[in-house]
Image (cartoon, rainbow, N blue to C red; front, side):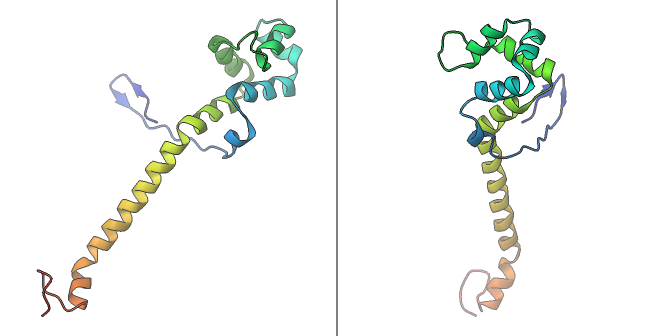
Length: 132
C-alpha cells in the first residue's frame, strides 16, 4: 500500500495479526465487538448516538446501517483499529501475500540463472548446449 502525499511517496508497512477475517464476518462485527467490550452506553455517548440506535446499527436486522462517518468517528474516539485492520486483511492481505510469493519466486529463478553457466559446464555442454 503506497499512499501518495503531495509529490512525496511513502511506503506504509503494516504488521497484522492474521486471522481477523476468520474471527469476524464483516467490519461491522469487528466494530460491534469493540463497542460491547468498551461498553455500549459509553461508546454511544462518545459517538453522539443513542445506545439503542447504535445497537440496531450493529445488528444483523438491516434496519439501520452503520454509516462510514460513524465508522471513522469510532476509529478516532476509541483508537480501536481492529475493524480497519480487518478490512486491510480482507481486501489487501491476499495481494500482499501474492506479491511476496512472486518476489520469492523471482529471487529463486535469479539465483538459478546465476548458477546456470556452472551447471552447463558441469553437464559437459558448451554455451550453445552441445556436448563438448
